[in-house]
Amino acid sequence: MNHSFRGFVLAAAMGLAGGTLVTVPALAQTASKSDQWIHVRVESKDDGGETVRVNVPVDMAVKVLPAIKHEPLHDGKVHICDGQFNDVDLHTMLDALRSAKDGEYVTVQGHENDVRVAKSGGYLYIYVTEKNHAGKEAKESEGKETRAKPVRSKESKVEVKVPMKVVDALLSAGKDELDIVAALRALSSNGDTDLVTVKDEENTVRVWVDSKNVSD
Image (cartoon, rainbow, N blue to C red; front, side, top):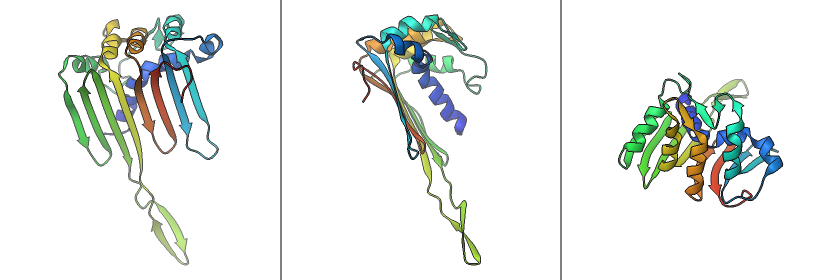
């Protein structure tokens, strides 16, 4: 396991909201009341860091996304290019998960990553903990001697929760595409849902859907 796996997990999950974020400048000018809203919150942990909040009505995103022509997003669908996910066939993998029985499919406890992939109660769960064992990398001088200074290990955690009916909708476009508009419609009908949480030493990111027109 390495950074490419974590990148793949994030890319697959954020695809549900990523297309919407492309439309933020336009949506900000025309926002209206809606039953369900997509919320994205990014909090920087740096000194003096800022918090970014994005709130987008689902019905507006459904109407606007088909008009956007921005690679790889066209007509509300994302085209999956060869090699885009480091030789992982995303469409085939999601299709296999869709038809599989509930259970815990992957559990990995390693030196670099802990990974858990499971399906339960109509939801797909993906948990990834990326470990950074810095060890004794930093050094400090003390008189004529130089000694290693222990550096605290850091972790990055990714938690993904996706309704399986959203996975069905994503796959409805065909083999080489993901239907983001169909997924948003399915997501809206599912009710309040936490989708993605990412925590690392630099930022905390949360993506969720509820009926509020402001984020927490």
